[in-house]
Length: 326
Image (cartoon, rainbow, N blue to C red; front, side, top):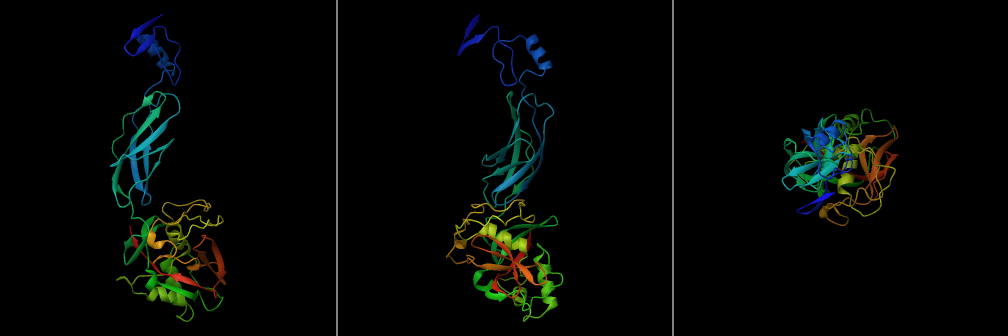
């Protein structure tokens, strides 16, 4: 038997509910019985908001605590930005939100959705501000991305091509050990160690970067391996497929635990850094300040991203960087 209601027919004697559906007209006793069995679809409670963290110029992560009253069925969490209502989804905390605007402040709320419905929104998160877009004029040069050294986040500044770059320069004039210059992330210390170990004839690249004064700044240095990699990832000049045997970088923000794919990273969207334009890296190998062995140092090619250990006496390009506390 059924009864006509506005909008259609509803079964008077409904079939047993599942975790995803409960159709019909139910008595309170029926509903209570199924709820006690954990069968009746229940609307989850609101998540408890945690900490939102900016992870780049267009992304953020939003942490939260799951509600205790989730009900039954698969749960999906949705983080929503304010302003703009940009969303990201996930099955657990934290949720990543992509598509944000550079240099913009946001807060976030989180909801939980199950077959029983969608929860109320959590309280708003802390306010975060996304970083600048790579290639933005900044700090006497150009913003290249962010680096994480032992939990301290820095904005990495790439020097102008016209004054901060040198071609056909050796890492060292001999294939001998460089004491101390082995850090993958601490370019300032690597540079200082080279400058202390030999004069500008021995370490031309390091002395050039260390002595540079441009853009109103004097604290330039030779980038370490993982700093140079951030420059490539964010300011890749070409559309060439990436070398997929390089790219892991625990010091990038966000950190990258996997090597490049053929298409990631893509060519930079910063026009001035695209191949053939005023600030673009040439498709050549570029020295980092990181020693690989007594005879070799790390370099990276800016056409396909390959990281390579080369003899220190080889002639390569170098481009100075500096860092600013984020």
